[in-house]
Length: 191
Image 1: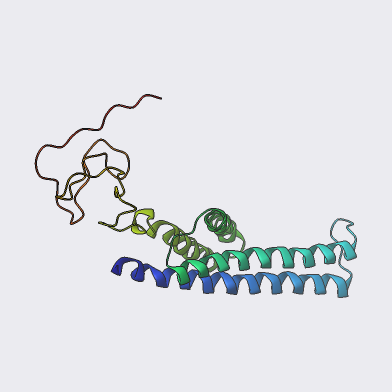
Image 2 (image 1 turned 60 degrees about the vertical axis):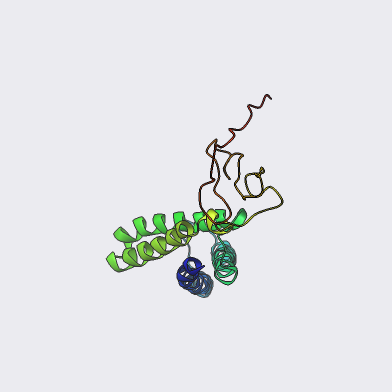
């Protein structure tokens, strides 16, 4: 029970950092759009209005992307469960984005920006790696009359069927001790 509580602060920190990045990225792109629009800048003959509109679209898209990733991290922190499905994909993608930005920022911005990107990358990876899917079930819980293995023994509570992952090794009793006496191996199955 104490394990998931230790991991919870990482999810909160990642959520706060990603929300701050969402606001920062959106504000930076919006500022660039305003600067291009007011000064009628052009790059290689591109229209200033199109450049300004592209920067505004980028502000909205990237701001929403980082905010959505922050929302996933916030849900992980509140629910204290690992991210699954699309949320996990989003967190993996934001980790890749920080790795790429870190590599680019070393040469363009400096080591401070690189260090920040690496720290955020490490926090996102830590968030993804510290939650274990087996923590959700817990030891000794049963999921029905046959327990997690699907087969139960006699009155002594020993499980005689395969273990929780379908391995041929016998599962443990509900109190965590190995079953007493001979264990009946599972019958072979045919497809």
